[in-house]
Amino acid sequence: MQDFIKQIEECKNLNELESLRILVLGKKGKLTEQFAKLRNLDAESKKELASTLNAQKEEFNQAYAKKFKILEQESLNEKMKENIFNFTYFDKNAQNGALHPVMSTMDKIIEYFVSLNFSVEKGPLIEDDFHNFEALNLPKSHPARDMQDTFYFKDKRLLRTHTSPVQIRTMLKQKPPIRMITPGAVFRRDFDLTHTPMFHQVEGLVVENGQKVSFANLKSILEDFLHHMFGDVKIRFRPSFFPFTEPSAEVDISCVFCKGCGCRVCKNTTWLEVLGCGVVDPNVYGFVGYKNVSGYAFGLGVERFAMLLHQIPDLRSLFEGDLRLLEQFR
Ligand code: PHE
Image (cartoon, rainbow, N blue to C red; front, side, top):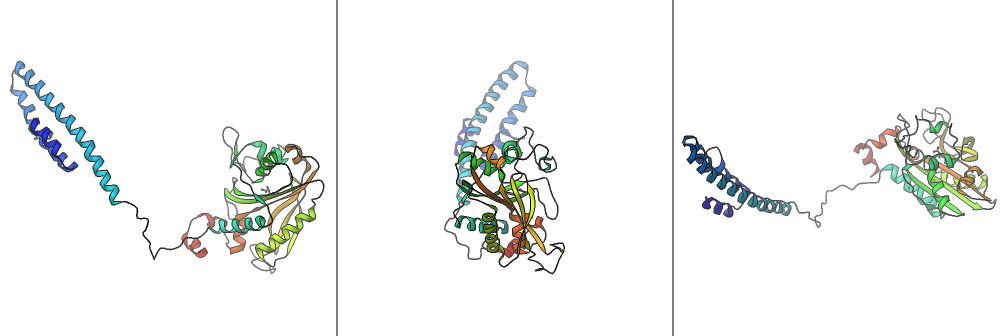
């Protein structure tokens, strides 16, 4: 037996060790053969031999297990050496990646406002009712709270349905003046040609002390912004409603697809809606403890901007990861 223990020590790899194990404990192994002899012995001798054999088996197994661990680690180390990453390798044929059109559109939007000294604020994707709805003057019965639109967690938290809660968070931690945008993902229970359950918004907020800010300021900055994004388009402001702004407007640009002739995308209206905006409703200031201030806010969907900039007809194709689409943006 001591011979086998010595052979275990001498094994150089896991294969050798396994061969040895079979030689000793396999079906026709040396030790197995000894065990077979027990059958023909009388009770007294059987007991004696069995105890010797079991002790030997135990000794072998222990030595085997110890060696196995060592050889296994060595073999792992070898494999690691083979797969080691070569940081100096340069593949001349590698293809460059590119920004996803949604991200490049987002960047273009952010760059515009950063150049006007807007700060860029971020907030959590998982929100509570107060920040996502209540502080934005959304009454309990507002359809936006409907189960149809909002993803709720069991504990009543929710996935934010717009980036507006970041306005609230920023106003709660900062005094006016505020000049901010907040880009990021938002979530709604919606899925068709023009809606996906996750999409991106950029929202803006300006608040000044006193009554300096008016709808005229809002109109002028948005007109400049839309010309920056879409070039020479016509722009119109249409009265609308948002709980957190008063007065509110939706902003249309002349259709970038048909240039005013009427087409499927603009549904023959020659106009495309691109923005929601308005003068901040005084009720909102009440929720964040602001007094004697004035301001405006606006919000837009980044995917919609990307579609219009790049003439992509189906919103969902932005999320399919199809290289045939993405390669066009390299
Ligand atoms: N939060 C609004 C939405 O998601 C957009 C909006 C923002 C409208 C700010 C007006 C002012 O629909």
